[in-house]
Image (cartoon, rainbow, N blue to C red; front, side):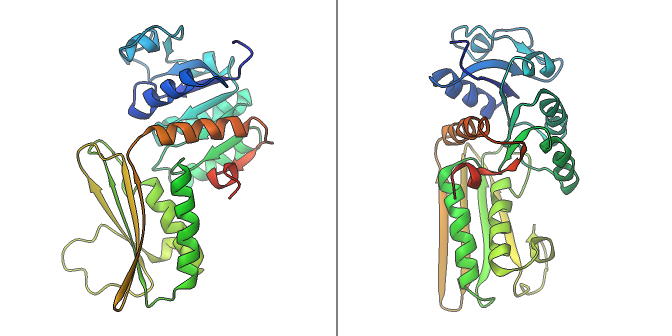
Length: 269
């Protein structure tokens, strides 16, 4: 059992953290090497299985990531940008595979990941599911095939607890659409329309965010032309798809050289 590669989960008490722990515990290919939470969290020092309301798994929650990074091969990180930046530096020191599902990273954050990627494998994606990454590819292709007579709008919906908007997946889709059109997303992005905004600017890519209930994740890419619309859609009904994708990314990363990768690399797309 101890010969299996060890995986650390950060943000262990979160929705994704708990799902990741369940997926790792159920997998015959890896073992749970550690569970990390922020200092002062009431899970610190407790067996993570018991803290989740189940049976003990022999792994206690810690607020010292270095302690568990030292005995692991990979870390899966769905936390917050500031925490992810700290974990990236530590993972690089420990030469771990760092799978990042954190969304809301700024351009400065992404730039700070590059030095870490010289020493460690970093797999980062706004969404870890196979279906979404296929949707990204389709979005790029459709955007390339249609001219600016078709307006592009990206509509995403998530649960009421999500703190960032647009979602990381929506931004992935927007980036794919911009690449298909051969434009810079930063120059054509429209978000958060409110009030008298004037007519839609031709060629811009719009974003709309819905938050409510327990929606796992829904994304539509709308290409709206005169007299016709094309809608590409992905609907997630089980958060487990993201956890399974992240674990797949960690296992794939164990065989790679240091550098920055995404799920398209992992899936061979």
